[in-house]
Image (cartoon, rainbow, N blue to C red; front, side, top):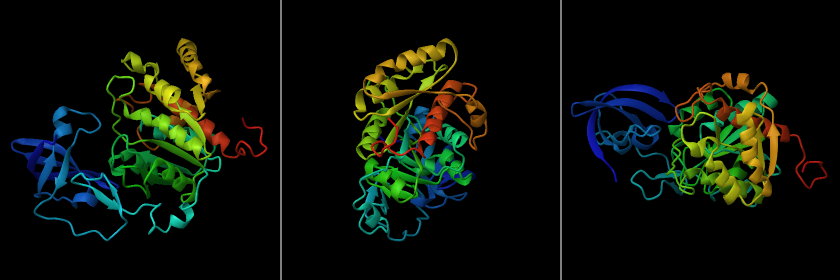
Length: 366
């Protein structure tokens, strides 16, 4: 289960909100490691550290660090008392946090009876790498939109693992973050996807919400065994709460795996089988035979959803201006342009809904 090692901190590397890279000498090896100071304290050169090296030994891409479990000779001081929500429950590094929806929270009165997202557009995406691309599309359509990110627990549990989120916050592209389920470290914590979405709208004043898992998508090559199945469940939560689900398709012209080429089977399963609430499925208007194939593959989704075609003109230039490096499965913007344009198209579409009255309010929206 856990591969334990003991080592000595050789030197420190990059740091970002909530995370510290370092190099650790383990025997005769120098390994790359990551510490979360909020959990284990702040390491310094010369510290003895206990490591979990399982992901590093297996050569996993996203999670390919040795993770610092403890600095046993220099334990951190006890943190101030917070709430009673336990995240990463009953693991050795479970964390106590104050939930926005718990009784001792200053947000509790707002959320106690909150039951409606007020027609707020919510972009749903499979992979964490879609987040900056969705934002690029939002701002290309509607500069200054207040966007809040809701991170589910399908991938990384600590929000601090995401350098993307740290950079998007620093650049002003994200107005706030909410971590839900077992995930932790957002500006607000919530018990469920439902209360996380309500927190984004009623507490953090989101005009557009983006919901996706953290870094580290898990897939098994089976129809149902992938963490992005949560995308369909998110659509159900959004629709149940009176939001406007905007589904971003996972599309690739470059993925070597047939199941992810064109529209990924992840999107077809999550939106076609799991999502029972209707959503607006955004199909980017891509050129050529590949674009035709994508449009044809989206046809079955019309049985339950509204399939909308959205132009991608100008989105490539908008994507080039993102404050973070775009990367998905090791491919950059030019290496998998269709993937990023699809996510940006969903953001563009969602931004266009901000000033449109929600359905049932006398609008022409349908």
